[in-house]
Image 1: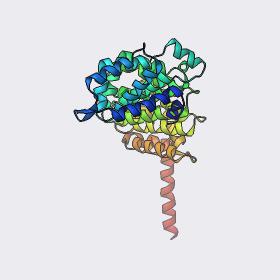
Image 2 (image 1 turned 180 degrees about the horizontal axis):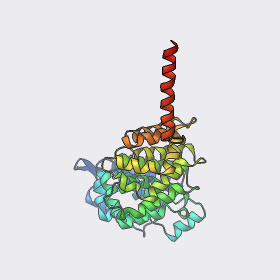
Image 3 (image 1 turned 60 degrees about the vertical axis):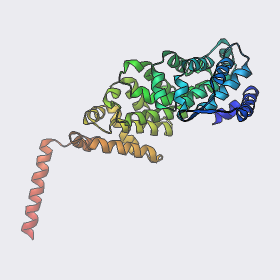
Image 4 (image 1 turned 30 degrees about the horizontal axis):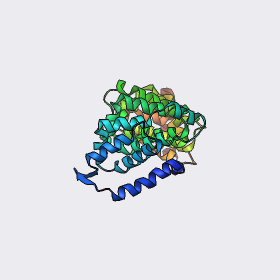
Length: 338
């Protein structure tokens, strides 16, 4: 990724990469449970090198070694190692030194690399669920998302958050993940945030709501989610990519149950966003997502007539009666003349 390329330009990190490659080529691994893992001596050495008292080069080398292990099924085993996880989170935390680097817009090599290892480990769904229950890890992630933490840290934290958001949305208790949902809402509404991050967040919400295990109606009732989706989907000045992703999330919300379809259609902002999206000429993806959402809504019988007359003048009963009489008279005259 561009961020990784930028990080590798930092001499300290580059040295760590090179020395680790050489070290692991000569290191014999044994297989445990189908995954490569050094013996206990190497694990202790890794933990020792991650200690704050060690110099930066040693800690960076240890993080690179740890990243090389964070693959396949072994990710779960690494995340379950509480001692190792604590050392990793410590490397990813902000410190007075990292705050100084952030204020000077200097790379925060240690934190970026540690967050990258966490990102690798969270490729496993069980690990993402575990993070939601880990207050220390959650607080660390939410703080890394703040603008004051620096762009390099924000970018890596946003990638982690996208994956964790799916697990948060599927959580049984909304109260348990309220802080995560608040962070989502703040990030997607932030005009200064990177567009690709906002697009990815709506994409993650789209995927999460599409899951059969998600309670779409409960989620829609949360104004932090529904208002964020409708704002991005209906805002004329919104970027095309973000709008398309938000319309995709809106489509996911109306995909299954009549109850939520009725609720979504009742909101003027929903109707306006979908109708405008369906008329989009420049972006096929926006139009497709809006049309698919409208098709889902139309599958609810109670909505079909309302949808047909949306934006048009509905005839009164009297007008409908007059129309019927006129048609009958016209037909009779035509037959007589023939």
